[in-house]
Amino acid sequence: MSAEIVQQAWQTFRTRDPERIAAVFTPDAEWLAPQGNATATTLGISHHMVGGEQIAHFLAVDFPRLFAKDVEVTFRGFHVAGDVVVVEETMTATLADGNPYRNDYCLVFEVHNGLIHRVREYLDTASGARQLGVPVTT
Image (cartoon, rainbow, N blue to C red; front, side, top):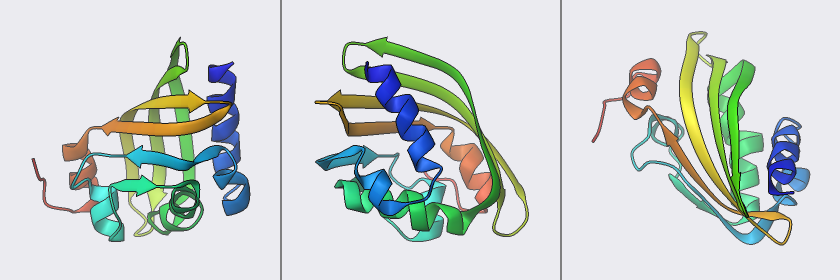
C-alpha cells in the first residue's frame, strides 16, 4: 500500500498543481534535503520544508524555475518496509540556463494514514553544485 501511495504521489508531482500536490502530504509533513544543497542555494529557499503547502509550492513553483524542461525521472528501485518507502532514481532535466542536469537521488518516504508525512532526500551534492555552478560545501 505505501509503495502505491508514493508512486501515485510522483504522478501528482508532475501535474504542478499545488492543491493536488499538497493533498498527498500530511499538514505537518517535512521534506528534508542536505543543508547547503545546490537547488536550495540557487533558488534561495530552505533545505527543510515543513507543511504540505510549502512542499507543494516548491514542487509546483520553485522547482520549475530551475529545472525548466525535459524533466525525467528514471526509477531504479522501490524498497518497502512497512510505512517506509525508499526510492532510488536518476533525474535528468534541462536547466533554466539551457544546460543539462543529471543526478542520482535516494528518497526515503514515511507514510502515515495514507499520506506522505516525511521525505528525506539524499543526492550527490558535489555533482549538483558543479552542474548548477554553486560552490561545493561540506
